[in-house]
Image (cartoon, rainbow, N blue to C red; front, side, top):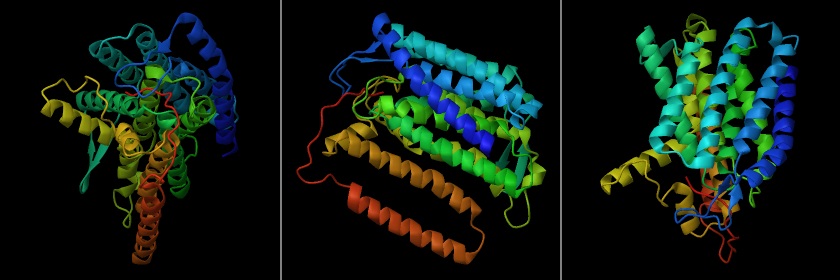
Length: 377
């Protein structure tokens, strides 16, 4: 655990320091988020926050290779190197988009390329749990599902990147939840504590922690597509790598059945539940209106919260809390075994939801809305 904590701190420190440098580079090169009709920010803001996060994640992973415990695990080094190379590619695609505003098809091709690199270097989803059974994937199905999953997560994070600190905080909270579960899982099953999944998720959490001071309202810079697609790929890769490093037969028992196998695949979806919900709503809304689903508008969840009178800080904190409830709630539900535990969990969830709706569900009367400084997806 001490090595993971060191990885988190290094990722946070490098990201924090690199963000200032990247901000200055963005200002000099003209990589700015201009004010558009669908945006809610009022001044042009520098991009390249994703480059700073990539630097933080890269530094943390390279450090992990030198540590006494994590550095001894050959499979962790191989898988994390594959993920790091693919992360560099998708971050570069995002940088080009921040500079030249690439078309949706070009960005999609870049996402597929990064996913293909992950697969080519040996990181694939090897099995999926279905009701009552565990299905081993053949090569073709494994490649298709891996690429689809990475592209899906990359776009989901991009959709939620619409308010200062929103995507950074949501992904950071989710990464902490994923790390907590992956670490508890290997400890409870008496497996090796060094996994690529734990390494990547703790590096994500550190990078988000280091970038948040630059990105929380009022933001001084944006992560841009380079950061949103990077975080999506890393989250997807953390799940995919887990299926290749853990023997599924070791994770099943008479009491829990397939639950330990289902949760690693469900957690990324839970972490990104708000972005996925936003993505689905956007697809339905735009398709129903006779438009292409990837054409932007100003009707995302964060836009609706602002329309209801919430300030940006309040809207972001509201989505933080919902993300934490869903992410950690899924983990808690996965660990519940007895009826007594179910009753306690049910009571706690009801109280949490009631308090959340009472305190944050509606804006405070007379609350002032600060000036917006962020862009919508």
